[in-house]
Every structure is written in structure tokens, then in C-alpha cells.
Length: 230
Image (tube, rainbow, N blue to C red; front, side):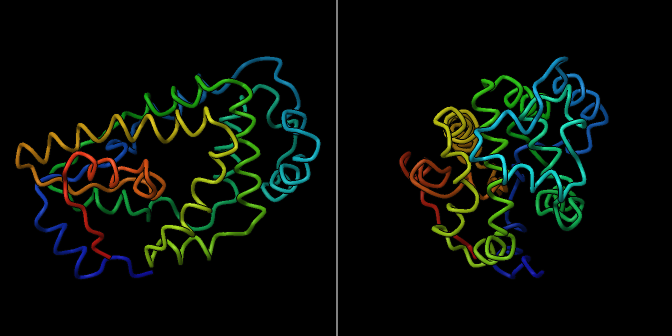
């Protein structure tokens, strides 16, 4: 997949610093932290944590991942959602755009730490975690991979929004904690880098840059000019 267009390469070459969600993606302590935060003894069966009408989608996801309720006896729902998503993901995360940008950048700034990210999920209410779990199952059931990829490559914001953020719309808490509040925290940091002449190249998840509450719109609200480069 050719995503490194001449326009992107030109903008990247002019950047003074690359800004990503998490700079230290290979933090050696991440796995131990995930294990520590994700486990709580005596959790209900995973398939029982979602509404009855939502269970077929979750059970189908678990079956494809070759996992069952017994694999999640101590695992909180947010972590189960991540584990299941990872197990059925196609492609190699090592080829991710963020990792490619980090490898090629002279300087990288992370907007969050891996500890902050995991803690944010861990502190969600149980209802919001279960909504996230169903959202992951629902998204996978829609088999949206190719359509989402095409929407990302072509910059089709309407289609991207349906694929990327629809699962967060299942819960106002998810929408606020995982999207809106993070965007609001990031924008002042990005704006400060611009004001200091650092020429930031911002590479964050697609869900964070689209829509009225996205990083682009919030920067425009502050008077900055933003133009898609591809």
C-alpha cells in the first residue's frame, strides 16, 4: 500500500518535529503494565457482559480469535476488547504509519505515555467498558476492513467516521474520554509547538482528526489554517 505520496514526503521533510500519540511504542514495561491493570479476579463470563442481543457479534469475534469465556475469567472488558482486536487483526503492527514516522523522524514528541493511555481505559466505568467490547465486535462483524482502508487512503471523512468512531457513539463516556477530552488536551500542545516555530508534523489516529470535535477543527477554531495534504 503506497501511502507515502510526494505531498506527504514534502511536508514531512519540512517538519521540525513529529508529534504522535505515544512516542515510546516499544516500551519494555508496557506488557507488564497491561497485565497489572487488566486483571481483576472474579469477573463475569465475557459473553455475559454485553446485552443478550449483542452476544452473537461478540461470540463470533471470540470464535474467530479461537478464544472463549475461559480465557477472560480475570480480564476486564476494556482489555478483552484490545486482546480480541489484536487476535483478529490483519497485517503486522510493525508496519503501522506511526512507527514508520517515528523511525524516520529526527525528533519525536508523544502527546501521551503508554501508562496514561492504558490507565484511561482502565478507569472507564464497567458499562462503558462493555460498550467498548461490543463496539469492537460490531465493527469486526461489519467486515469493514477494506472499505475503511479505502476511506483512509482517499481521505473520505464521512466513511472514516462511520468506521472509526461509530463504536464510541455507543456511550457518551466513551466519546468523551477516548476522543473529545483527548483532542481538547492535545490541541493546546500542538498550538504551542506551532507558536514556537517547531513546525510539528502531527500523526495521530484518523478518528482524532475528523469531525467538528477533531484536532483539525479545534485548531481552526483557534485561528490556525489546516489543509489536508493527501
